[in-house]
Length: 160
Image 1 (cartoon, helix red, strand yellow):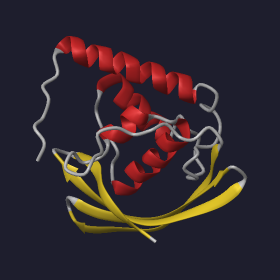
Image 2: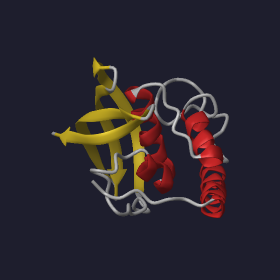
Image 3: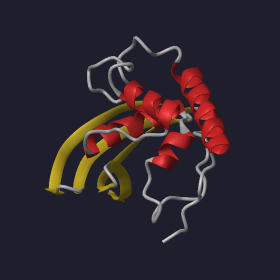
Image 4: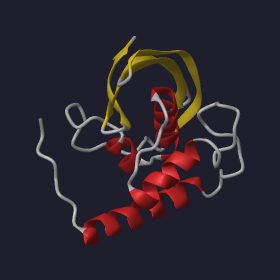
């Protein structure tokens, strides 16, 4: 297990300001449009609410693993790297994440199954479609999520 870093008030404020600015910049043009996660709701009422809460307070407030998975997909579409890292379990989280390729276009998300193993463990099976350099890609994953201190985190996934 990795040691946790202690945040000072100044560090937390600076991180929160940077996250807030990144989320506002990335999501500014899509607030009233359908959420990229495919829920059928507007971004502001869907993943945008989770992204904003994180940017403003650092809190992770997804009510379940499916909501977290959808918000992570949307974060990938918007290059919200800080959110992606914060929602990744520290035991499996990479040190850094690269921004998406310039010609990467996310095309859609299909949630196939969401199941609960117990109060703190859930899985979500999904297919994410994208296009890079004019070539279509499809990623099928069964992701595992765990709730730690009340917050859902992505643990790992099996990709087909």
